[in-house]
Amino acid sequence: MAEEYSDEEMDKIFNKINKWYIEFCESKYFKDLTEEQKQQSEFIITTFAQYMYSYHGLSHEEWNESGLEECCLDTLPRKVSADESYYKSIAPVLSAFFNFLGEKGILRSASKLARRVKKIDKQIVKNASDPSRWGMAKSMLMAAIKAGVDIENEKELNKFIQLYNLQQIAELKKEDKTISVPQSMPNKVRIGRNEPCPCGSGKKYKKCCGRIR
Image (cartoon, rainbow, N blue to C red; front, side):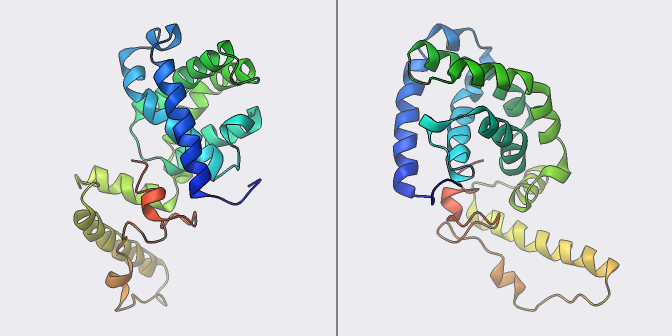
């Protein structure tokens, strides 16, 4: 990262993106999107802005093609627990958003970013559907969703995580007889909103995977 993560800076970025998004929704670029893409647009734009800063050290003023590719092809598929419609909508939504910012003179690299994200459209969807590319937290959340867990319910999610971790260790024990399950583990796998995110980002759970769902 180009600079140390700052909650204050992240809030400034979100405030700016929110202002742009409101204007974007009134533009011809937004109106040309499909209904599904419109529904996904706010989540796509905010998650992109968040991870471009928190994982790639790029504020909205510093967005570039290499950061865009890495974020869309690696970081978002690895981190964001969302269905296929989210990933199918990333390229059209971001392309429209970049073109809007370019027309307004807000983002100098807008046209290059719009062209680049269109080129990697299919690869984004492909990478997101590959479980081997998912991070630990996303793998857990996707498993919870598949199991019908309400991931907005902290108690229910923590109960699932406890079982999930024990199941993972049980699988490892089948392969390696030397692995044992610590008796205290159930108390350690709970995730409080202010505790470090299990994905390893270094941020609080509520500011990371607990925020992006």
